[in-house]
Length: 408
Image 1: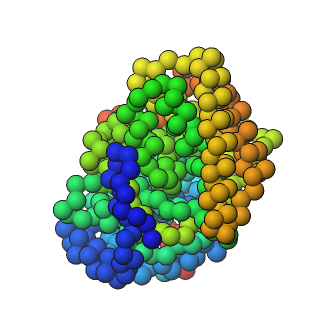
Image 2: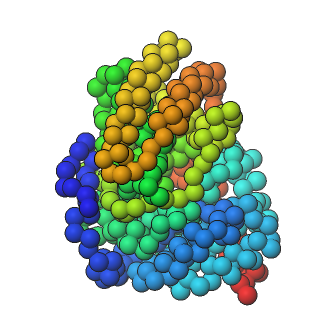
């Protein structure tokens, strides 16, 4: 059970009473009559073959308040898309599967690519971007939750708590970030958030001094959580990264577009676990190594837009400052783990810190040597301006796929 302490400049909504999920859902059913509610699920086909997503679908099927479920399906051929249609057919709510690798959506993507208006690299960011476009185009939901499809500890109260802040008609939140303790199987997980993001934000504060953006980012208890919710109007002009910087990029866009009192974070789970990425000590283009580089570049880009100047000396200072802070965090987490009867591998933790420190320099080099890189996917407002019928065509492609490849 969480405490009631409000830290930072973002409102924190706690789990103070373990309120029954049925009570939350009763409220949400009432809210949905005035503000239809939806769910966005970005999924790889491989996740349909694992145990996590089958349980997630069973849990979601019991949520009585959802008016729309949008599933973005990546890395699937025609046979796999047919399987996915059948897999998700148990959902009683209105739902659609976006076959991102299908010929219809690929053709639309090719036209947007020619205009320079589509994500250029595959991944979660691209999947989420097209799903967001479909949600805008279909107009069925006013408040939407998004979460990953590999959560092994999923229960439907996570979804209820996640969407509640943007569903309640008397709340004024446009965006809500989920948080939780990354503890499972007797271990403290969440290495990238614990050992990279938080100490890096603290190091950036030391190097650049007082900064409202850094204070804002450091207010989130789990900035890399893949679970968040939002009002539909958020989607019109948001610009998101298509790489591993997605979560940091979304938070940065919320900081740019909205005042802090329109944003919040909510405690959605006492226990959370999902598929773990390899550390990839020897490969900077894979696993947590690639993730750490993308995340670090996302922070650099945001600070650059605020007028901060970076050079090689800046990155060297930042690396040294980060390294000392991160090593202190290792000791802190070790003591926390011991007091709670959990295990924590100090050697493995410090190996991760050493890799993240190296990748701060790598991210800095890439930031300096590629000044013309386009890190963000264009907003849907811009896409509609360039292709006015894009929403009609997106909905048509999804509906034709749905009719042609009926489940069964």
